Picture 1 (cartoon, helix red, strand yellow):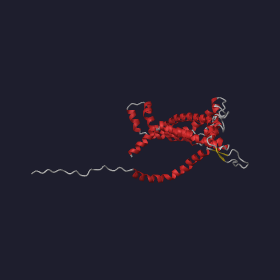
Picture 2: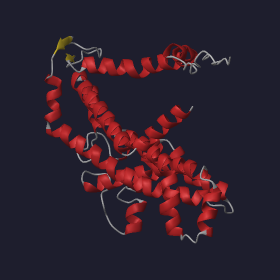
Picture 3: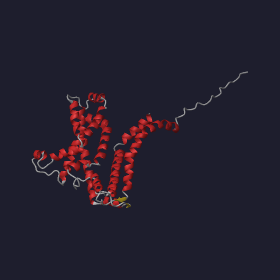
Length: 319
């Protein structure tokens, strides 16, 4: 009699358990502890002033000073009265000047900085000296560079002597804007060049060698290899310069002077209100400036830097 034997199914193989959220959170605690000192410092020097300024913008505190320099009038709740000045002619002029100077200077600095980076990235004699000399303007303090350019733009200065004209560069008018744009471009274009140079140096040389083997021209190599690969560094440089240029104050103050209508920026307006003991309007304008910078940075990252964020997320998933 034949017997039929059947294999009993063994226990089903369970897929390996994925680390749960608790395990991930447990591994993140050391990182949180290591970052906590930095987060505390940032909260003290960044978050607290923002909250204090936002609160102060709803109050009026002190319109006059006594003989000893103390505020005579105390705090009073003003609601949105301090923000009414946002619709005023002076604030709109400061907003226009800030935006105009930012757009023009950053655009010129990106072009010149990229050209500087391409020159500094080439292998040539004296490359170290060339890099150091190009970065000198960026290392000069803004107040010093402002005074230097003020002497250059005087009525009997070097600029008029070279151009053969009698332009009043440091007076009110469009020439004052030109003076600020020239001085700011001279100082900060090397900063853009430095960041772009860092992006150029991480491009493998084999990529250019392959392009030469394939017969690519210099123009094709730039537009199809150099520019796409250096784009992340270029976007970071532009973002940093945008946020820095939107709060410009010291250069117009030193070069042209305070309370000049043609070059008064939002930071200059905030300084003027604060020195007049109008702390409420000054805080309101400061809050608007912060929101303006934050909005531009957010739009810039969302529209132009989306690929950077996607790269970071992809690397996190792969890790």
